[in-house]
Image 1: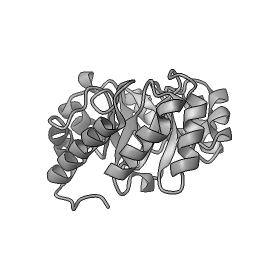
Image 2: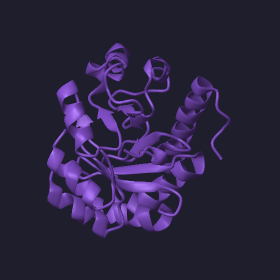
Image 3: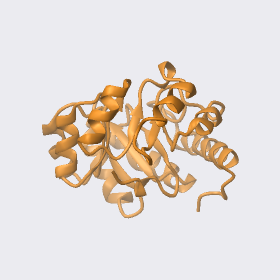
Image 4: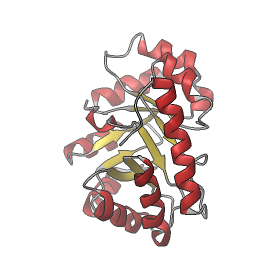
Length: 212
């Protein structure tokens, strides 16, 4: 279980619906704001092309990869275009094992303690608490009392700058941020502004200096 990828900013930009035409503009806005983890869900238009473009442009300073990965075969498609991150909506240990065998970072989606332990045993680097709307901070705190020390839990689903503090107080190590950050057609400048709002909320809550 490696958590080095969560530095310097453990906020994952979930770019659902991103098109290849918008990939570089949106990616530039996010990277300039300070984001260092970019996820293109596979149910976006031409996701592999977008991942390849983002990996080529930002792969030297960002972790780029795919979300909504549901099969082991998809892992190799993502790796082929330069993706290094596998994010899943579910806890399929076969996908986790395939990602780790390929040397990739993997964050499966979990909603139960059974899924959490199973995916960690398979090699998961972090656990995506999904959907976070059904897993409030009290649940996260209870999980951390029994999960292996150092387990990184990242709530995903309904995350806004206003509700990050409660999850962080309960022990969250980061977040996946979707529609509050990006929706298809959102201008790159607006994405950048939203990104800075999230980063400001993160820095304020964690008392960190601004991300370089």
